[in-house]
Image 1 (cartoon, helix red, strand yellow):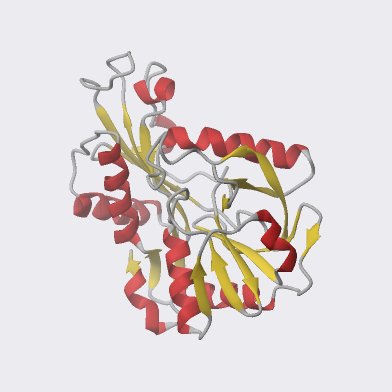
Image 2 (image 1 turned 45 degrees about the vertical axis):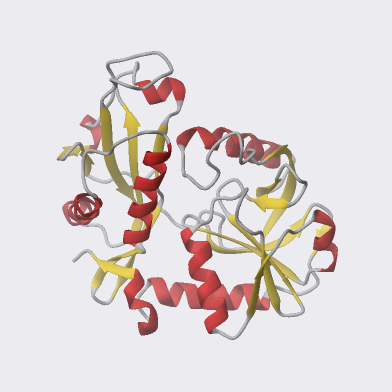
Length: 298
C-alpha cells in the first residue's frame, strides 16, 4: 500500500505511522462505522476532488442511519479533506473518510462510546486493472434490504462483499456479482452494475443496492451522450441477450466486463469504453460541462 505523510484524525493532522487506535475500539468488534471512498484527480488547475459534496452528504446520512452524530459539520469535513490533500502534497489518489465508535465502551449498544473521525488518502491506480474483467455470479446474496439500511455505506455491510470477492478470486475470476433476495442482479462487491442491449443501457433499480455516486454520474453522462438509460430489475437470464456490461464505482471508475460466468459478450465494449473515456475527461477537468462536480484542492 502506498502511504502518504499525514492522516487527519479528530481535528488534527497526525503522521501516518503515529495514527493509531486501541484494540478495544467498539467498531473493530461490532462493525458500526461508516465510510466513504472518494477519488481526486490531477487537473491543469491542481488536484480536484470528484463530487466531494455528495460523498460527504452520504457519509452523514450513513452515520444517521446507525444513530451516530458526527461531531463536525459537513463543511468542516470537506475542508478537512482539502487540508489533508494539501498537507500530503499529492496530486491524485483515493480518500477514505471513516467515522467509527472508538475506545471506551464495549457491548452492542454504542451509546457512550466516543466517535472518532479519520481522513486518510493515498495514491491508488485502477482498482480492477485496465482490461475488461471476468465476473462470477456469487453464491452469496446481497444483504436483504429489511435486515439493514441498504443504501447506507456501513462498515459491517462489507463482510458480505468480502465473502463474494474471496469466492470469485478462489474460482479464477476478477470480481463477483451478487443477486438480491428476489434473484435479481444487485451489484458487485464494491461496484454498481450496468448492462447494454441494442444501445440501451440498463441498471438495477434502487432498493437492494448502494445507489453509487459514480453510478449517478455515469447515468447523467450517458443520457447527455444521447443514450437511453433504464433502471429496472435484471435477471441473470437477461444477460444472455446483452451486448456489453460494465461496473461503476469510486475505486472501479468505469470498468468494462468481458464475461459473466460462461456468458461472453459479443461486442468488444464500444459503449462501455466510450463512457470510460468520457468519464476520465470529466474527472480530470477536460470536459468543462461538468466542472461543478470537481472541488479544487489547490
